[in-house]
Length: 170
Image 1 (cartoon, rainbow, N blue to C red):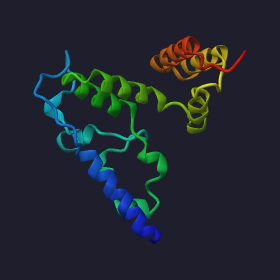
Image 2 (image 1 turned 30 degrees about the horizontal axis):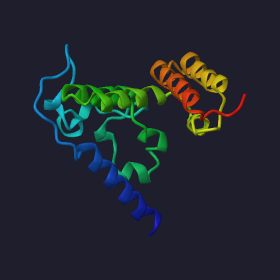
Image 3 (image 1 turned 135 degrees about the vertical axis):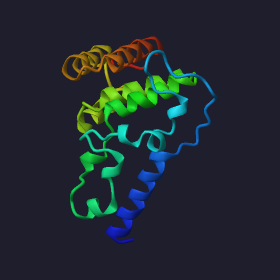
Image 4 (image 1 turned 120 degrees about the horizontal axis):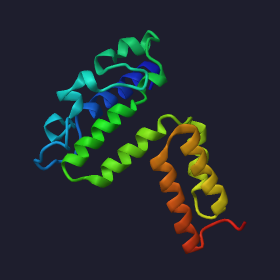
């Protein structure tokens, strides 16, 4: 497969996934206030002007031609935290709180560089880190990147690892 075919395939998959999802939602009103709810889902079809990338591009800014011309970069394909929050609100509106929490954790992590995320992931594997090291990672995420939800998650993981004997020896 040549590069142009690969780009076409990737673009088609991205555009398809933005407008559709295999999740079936039950009818329920939106979250309290001016939240996004089931009736606005899928966002890519019902509110495409609000679905943005981390660089501020909206769905209509994406085309194969712009990729080929170099007008779009890999950074343009990263989702904006606000878009993930809208997805979380949809999940909340249909009683999918676990999914909503995951979307909010993901939204926080957009600020963290990819190489650091990989380091955090590796540190969270059993027997890779001490409790002190995991708490240090949590502090870093909270203070440097404002990832309060993820920091709490890592501290909780450290405590669970301690109870289950899955920490690296100090």
